[in-house]
Length: 139
Length: 139
DNA sequence: ACGTTCCATGATAATTATTCTCATTTTTAT
DNA sequence: ATAAAAATGAGAATAATTATCATGGAACGT
Image (cartoon, rainbow over all chains, first blue to last red):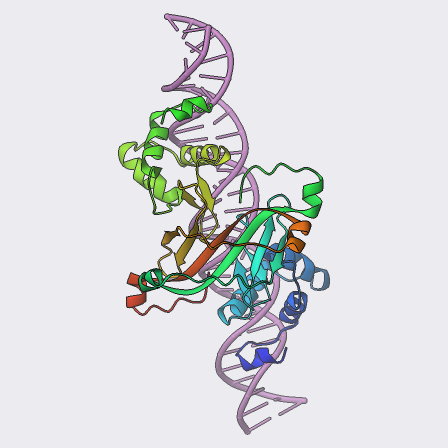
């Protein structure tokens, strides 16, 4: 928490509320989710503040912006390399903390400076699977 | 090409132009890219038609909608399982046709019906790497 | 505690990608 | 050729995100 001052971020109550919500959060919330949650304590908070804060955190590498959900950006406070699994039906995202030992051939490395990788698994979560859900094929 | 009638899609000139542009295309174009290209031959084509056509193709599994670019959806006529690599700077996307043999533990399979996976590699393409580009950390 | 500087906030406008509506036109099967 | 069904284009509508900017509040030095 104190880390924020050190990296040039002013610690405002709004930010603290956002940080607190994100800390240890594994639900991969969208900006809307965060807004709705923080609003309970800060009814006057604006979307701009949420987006500003998320962008500030992202730029400093303190959170990850996930592109796994085609509808909206999702945010992840877990910055250790890991993968994700998204339910095609309810769009829930869960962590996959496994090392798949992805190695690309030298040939490819020569043509592209690879900085990282991310696996997205898609399918149906337990709940949605039960209901016999037909997803429309979207990822 | 004839396949389209068979699957209940009427073959219009606009669609043919879109299909022709997509056929064998490995640039992973956005809707805008497709629109701009097809517009050369059909100046009166509308965005609605592009989106309609893409959605019709996607629903029938003839193209893939990629979520790899946070700015916009990208489309891929190559529906064989493969992976992608995105340049953080110029947002170009290239295919990675390699089998990484991703296997998830049974434990996970029990809790989630996994239908597929997709690896996104991110980094810098040759051109952007040369220019010594500092991407801002976004994926 | 105080004042100053600079950054953050919130209200709201603007932008961008995508979806929707609907009257008209085109395709396709007969 | 004709009718039924579906596609088109124009533009409105929606939704997520970004930008603008006047005001307010944190940080830091005194």
